[in-house]
Length: 549
Image (cartoon, rainbow, N blue to C red; front, side, top):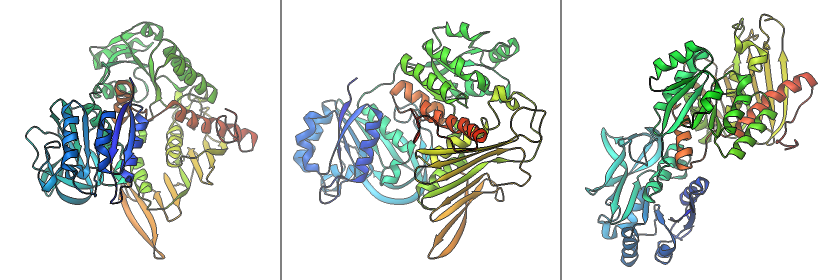
């Protein structure tokens, strides 16, 4: 399908394109579904309408749209085209302060709310189908005198009353989507707001989801933490996905899968499940050392794959899977669902606010002194080693916080006490980045002295999670030469976002949040940290700064 042409109108009093419009344009470009053009003047609209499929209006302080321009826009929408309004856009179509016939509302009060909770009230509409309630740090605009034809999709509470923040309506043969959010560039850093805007535009442009549901099979059911059931339930809770099959060599586990999901088919082997053409996607929940081999079989059989973390054990395995996914034109992603842990989301928000300045050092990990459990996750041949389990999460987190090229990886691995298992007792990866930042990721069962789970240093302050304040960070900042300490509670987790994104990717073409190449970088750090421990020098893995591709 050819990309839709979208005109984005926003500007200051001198007609220069606004930063919010540029942020919206970048969001549309990344989707691959749209070709946006940004202009900073309302006067330019009428000359360009014949060459675009949709028009997006942001707050435009240059005043109401001239009557002849609004008439042209009315003809544009009624002919079947799309109109999207962001924040105070309704004011641009309200000559004399009256309600616009197009947006079906008029701008009311501008409410400075700080963080507010946006609540979805219509979870079936395309704009909000996989959105859910979400926090937004924004300047809220009151949408007053909504037309009776406007369908409210989401609200936010203000002084105890729900105010509409998103609505949709039809005008003639055209469609109109309006959001009261998006009052500043910070709003566009909110993934939920961006998704609502993108999917609202999809609805207005009549871009429909691909036929679903995507039918999912679980490879490896039961065992560690009941992950088969967890994945199956999360899939079934995602509009557009369905659990239809489960595979395990243990008959007791397939019997349990049938109890948990009565409608799913069960298989005693991967080969048998791959022959089932009704299975579109395989979730690989097998032990770590089997991920690469079985994922390759799934991709070559034409199935999409969600691999449990860690992705695999080596960069070589990662590269083979990435090539296979590219050749088969199938999705390949990794279940890094902990990107949506409440504490990690809170760290991201603190850093985005600029509270502690530029990050130059991160120390993180789990450190304790205790006898490891004797099971397959403690068997190096199966698990890959001590750093591959929780270490894979911490490495992925760090790479999200420091999006820079990796200069080198130094590793320090110790095996000294716990000889009843083959995993290392203490593993440490020290990563140096191109901007000079450093990360120390440690997973240890040989640490007699505790260390914080998170210690993040920035040029203007720091963040620490040392366990002294339950479910909260201590945030240190410097203002006028004095240190200020505050307690910031962890925000809520949003683990459902992983499978919601998988559905959005497969059914609408949205960007994949967790890509195979991102997961490859995490595996590279772990693998090459161990190589460094053996060699006694810093290592660079292929594809990073100084390494071969």
